[in-house]
Length: 72
Image 1: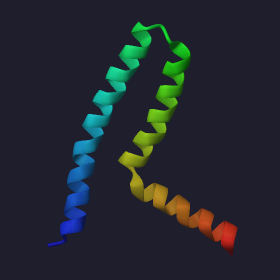
Image 2 (image 1 turned 90 degrees about the horizontal axis):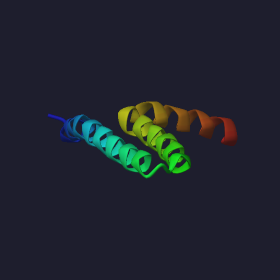
Image 3 (image 1 turned 60 degrees about the horizontal axis):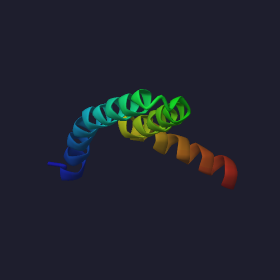
């Protein structure tokens, strides 16, 4: 039994719904305050964070490719 892989799978399953709730609450808060510039920045930032949380392996592969390009 691979404890680390099971923990990663469980954590990803829990973090995605929590992240979605944070995005909804933050977007509603900024929209109700009519702070649309901050809302756009918040949504871009949360888009980046959600891509990292939802697919960390893709980010790791991108990092490896960039490492090879820069240091090879």
